[in-house]
Amino acid sequence: MQVPFTKMNSQGNDFIIIDNTVLDYQFSNTQIKSICARKTIGCDQLLILDVKDKNHIGCKIFNQDGSSAEQCGNGLRAIMLFLNREYRFISCTIYVNLIPYLATYISQNKIQVNMGYATFIKDIPASGSCNKITRDNFFYKVTVNDDESSWSFLYAYLSVGNPHCIVFSEDSFIYKDKISNCLNSLYEEGVNISFILNLDEFLEETKTVLELRVNERGAGWTKSCGSGATATGAFVLRYISLPQYGLKNINGVKIRQEGGELYVEHNASNSLGEPELILCGPSVFEYDGIWND
Image 1 (cartoon, helix red, strand yellow):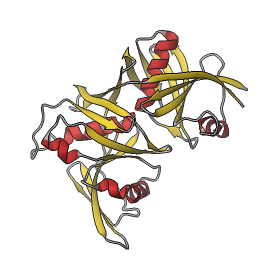
Image 2: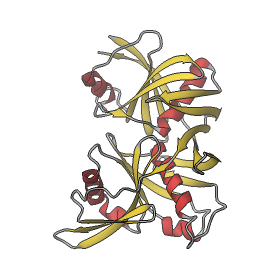
Image 3: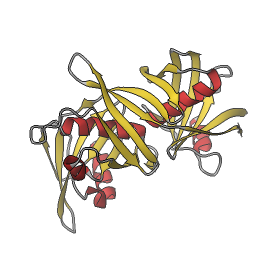
Image 4: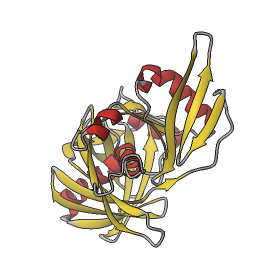
């Protein structure tokens, strides 16, 4: 089997896009892992498209380990750039797991995706490998007692089409592996884990660019994660509106990861008062190729 593909990159988060509109290739789990493996073409995620028209773009997303992904903000921007190159679309609606995402091409450096609404999960999970969990407002405090010491961290759990834990307590990145293991023990299907490195600095000066590192479910540590940035933006914009901060007039935040900067802003609100989240950033075309099975 010979399969044409396009390699795209969104700030170091790289993708293989296969346009499945005409030939309708069927891929086994083994083939998906082979395509994604770094010893062959290699990518963080495989994006398989079915283009009906600009209002109906079907997309399936697969991680390196062959598992399905529920959503990918950087991947959606890569898809929009691909559709602009191949179909001349300026805007389109991309469906992932039946959820529509409106994407707009302004320039290669400015591709916008309406990521929908964030849903904050307030149920306290079972403790897993963590020793104690308490809830404060819309986030949690976890206390861990291990052989070396007792320590704690703060995180929020929310969904932007896929699940994210936003870890925001000071110096928590020092314990990134232990925290990742702890949080993955709380959520059986795994979770994307984002670490904000400088929230205290941001609270003092909101023009500060937030520094973020993300451990993606099914892909591991990546240079950039669009949905992680979106979830982080949703959390921060809610957190700074708490009474002790009272910063309610800020509608957007810049977020820097190893791959570069993204911008997350609020748009119109739904009937419950939850704002839509707009993710904006670049994507680039790398090359076209043929995968031979």
